[in-house]
Image 1 (cartoon, one colour):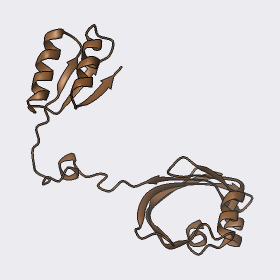
Image 2 (image 1 turned 30 degrees about the vertical axis):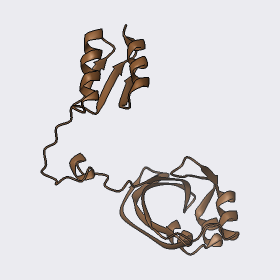
Image 3 (image 1 turned 180 degrees about the horizontal axis):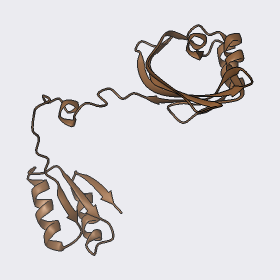
Image 4 (image 1 turned 45 degrees about the vertical axis):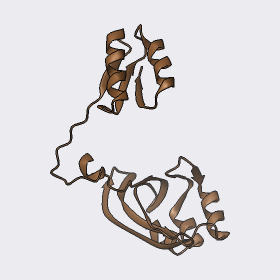
Length: 184
């Protein structure tokens, strides 16, 4: 697998494992070619002090195959490790499997946890979220919603942009601090 070669900065090993048309789509959207990756490793710009994988699933589809999994990593110069999900796409050329594509996605801390846990409440907590819905539908809706926001009875509102009172909401928004989700 390419992970050992990545972990130990083995450019020669990666060169053998990666297809010539290899691309790595990073968590930030950066796309890196085989040549770019190998140059970064050879120049010492990509070094991991930790790299482990688990939860791997392998599916072969004839000449292509896909491996998905979870990885924990730490860059050599970084204080904190990070986690990500990954997808490797392999292609079979003759008898050899080569990595054609690699896609990584940051594993957000708390992902998969219920909302109340991510907000700091116990797993079994019941939360009530009040939201002023459909601002801009009518003048009376706007007046009542802004009064509730001013009195801190609610802390969020949603605006219906194509509605007739949208300019009133925009003008009122400038006068107070609140969170508005705009739906178009």
